[in-house]
Amino acid sequence: MEERLKLKSKFLLSMVAAIPAVLMPLAAAGQIAPERPAVQHAAQGYKYEVYAGFAYTSLNQLNLSRYGLMGGKLALTRDFGRHFGITANGDYYRVPTGNGNPGNPTVFSVTAGPEFRATLYGNVDGFAHVLLGCEHTGGESMTPDVSFSGGIGGGLLYNLSQHWAVRASGDRMSDSFSLSNNSPALAYSPHAHWNARATVGAVYRF
Image 1 (cartoon, rainbow, N blue to C red):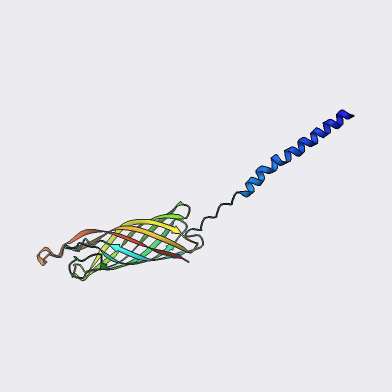
Image 2: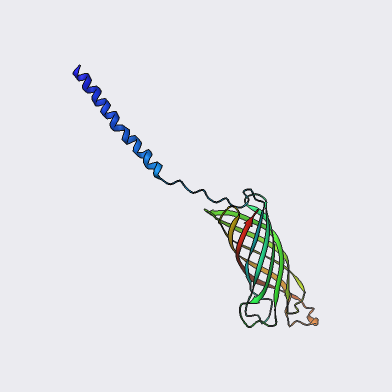
């Protein structure tokens, strides 16, 4: 009888000792902070994006150009799913980055094309687009008055919230203006020029 009581006592003590060993990992797991949910990215419940920002372009179509121009950029993108959209862009540049360009040049362009996106890490998205449209270079009597314009580019977005993001991007754009010293005898033949463009600003989704 005494041996049975001793065995029961040992069994109960072992069970009591096992309880803390089981509960301690659960308590430790409960102290780990839950992961913060990532901000919802574009195209999750929103169909449009509006972008506005500061912009810069080089000015290679002017023979004596030494400095680029600063201005602004507006864009509207219609999203078709998480990774694809159609974007339309308007750019206007007027303020030179230095003193040395001939005359008083200005650049205005309107372009549109497909845009492709992907989530890179956390709240950071990457995108690439192909743009086609037209460009006008004013203040220098360029020929033609309006040129074909096209190019490729891309950039990064950092999502601040479901509606707002910060965006930085760059493009390599081509136009086709005649050299300013061409004569009628040369038929004002156009020459392709490539300009680097950059912009930084804010995105709003709705």
